[in-house]
Image (cartoon, rainbow, N blue to C red):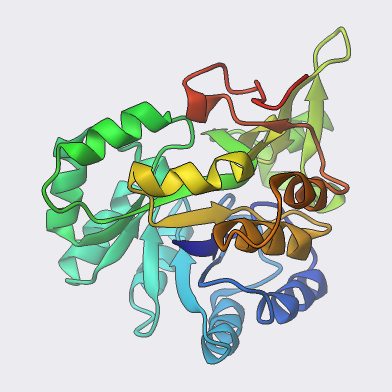
Length: 298
């Protein structure tokens, strides 16, 4: 089973991103996804910058995939998507059907992202015919549903599963981070830069509820499938995806690697992964339960 690092979902300053990927090159990862996968207004790095990072990571022995945006809203977004598809070197994760269309037209194999919302073998088989060599299961898909879907296919593409990080739940044309400060989306003043792990949202009773990340809504809890790593192999999962956070990400990566290789007890690996974690762990969706539940709760 391989270990992948998903794209950074938050808006970090340029130097912080460059420093982060300089460290990523040394981590025990097989695959790294790069690019802006949330909002087209985030421009700390441009496509040439992402391609430079991709070259360095490839030289460090990583497979690199460029992630496309899940919500194409303008002609500039579409132009960037065309340049992404035509980069000529690295494969692309299609997070929107516009990307699927362009990649298929160019006869390029691609990764079908979780935002394509694949819930049945017919759709997955169709995407496979269009060129999908790998797919990422929807974040709320339960183990039983994933196992059932894969069992109905003779030769499914590689299966990747979101295994760690705040869950990306929804996308909107509105920017909730800007709205919180009474700013219009087109003049957001890039307030996302002030929230390295998103903006927590609580209920009136003060309980963690959601996390705002620009146009993206995330879970408050941190999805954590570390306790399920060993049984995951039997579910047909080929790759586990870890979503970057602003601190102690190397410890998360190494904790998952140790569990994949059965090199550390679960309690030790969990303690390392949860260090300074921005939210409580949860794994409810994987067990067919409410998403915010945690199997190891006392």
